[in-house]
Length: 344
Image (cartoon, rainbow, N blue to C red; front, side, top):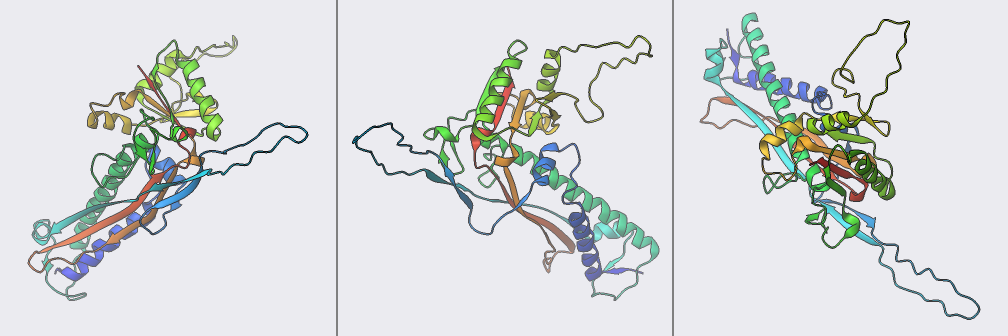
């Protein structure tokens, strides 16, 4: 008994399509930033880029006067257009027919239904495809999550991510088509000089800046070192119930939750920050020492879904191929609604 190359290709494509379509938004808790972004996902419009008009200046000509004092009129140019380019990412795998034969699956050249497959071969195929499909999708999510954290300079075609939009150096660089060196309104809040003595006051200052410019942040993301420093700066007062059995737990939170809050919002630990520290060893502030105040009303993740592609194999290669394609971007319409903090 055997399986035809046509049937094998169809089975592989079906397995990948079914897994991706049913699991696109079921991101593991260990990728909290990607989970947060996808929970508020917007559809990306087709075109070379995405842009919108933003208010940069009211151009007010307000003045007091009396009697026949002349009234001044002025020309106003209150808006500017930002511009965000989408990026394309792919991931793919191929499996040679000989590798499948070695695994116990007799692959034969042929069309659909030309051969019957034994129960044992069906089980081997199912397990083999499940492993490859799982590795492809999970590996893609991990890579996309990393990219959406970074500043987009890792390659010429990389997506612009959090590190560019909420920058440690917000007075430099062009983001969304606007030069932050010239446009003071297009700058997030940044302070990387926090320590145990100044943490409370400096976090309060950053929070007020976000509120002033865009409203209350609703998502706080931080690295392990920052979370430890924050926990150490908190004084816990315990009121003991003399009549009850005491249970002592030095930790706070439950499971993956830190149990640490700021202004009523839980501080979320992002394990990806540790991976980024291994990749970006020259960063001015380590990712594990950072904390981000994010306002989801001014940060948008957009894509047009994941395309599942079954490439036609070359005539001179005995293998089958599967590929996923993503097009998307991360945008903001108000950079000063966000803040990044770091411990020194």
